[in-house]
Amino acid sequence: MIEVFKTDVNSQDDARILVDRIHCVFEHCRANFDLQDCDKILRVMGIKGEAETWQIVSLVKSYGWRAEILTDDNFVDGELPRNLLIDDAKLGT
Image 1 (cartoon, rainbow, N blue to C red):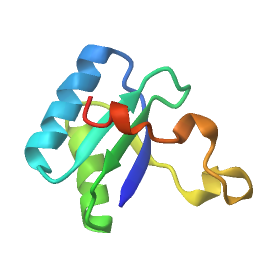
Image 2 (cartoon, one colour):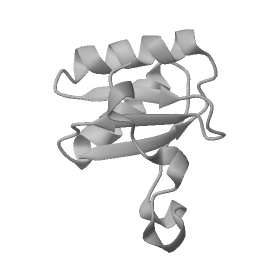
Image 3 (cartoon, rainbow, N blue to C red):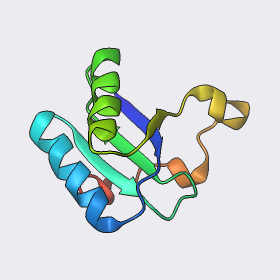
Image 4 (cartoon, rainbow, N blue to C red):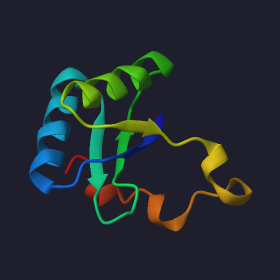
């Protein structure tokens, strides 16, 4: 499962810290940030359920940032906005 989060992470250094930590705690997941997006998107691929989704929110918050799950309600006509499409080459970066 792929989960998409809106965050308030602003720097590449902070994003790297969080991605590294996510990869340590959730070894089966791959995460990346899109800091160019206005919502400072965090994408996590490989989440095994709702409990892990909330654990990721909690992990981000434990480092002092905010993470909010983006739901289908955030999308127009049920389509994923172009800026949220996952580029496989960026996963894990």
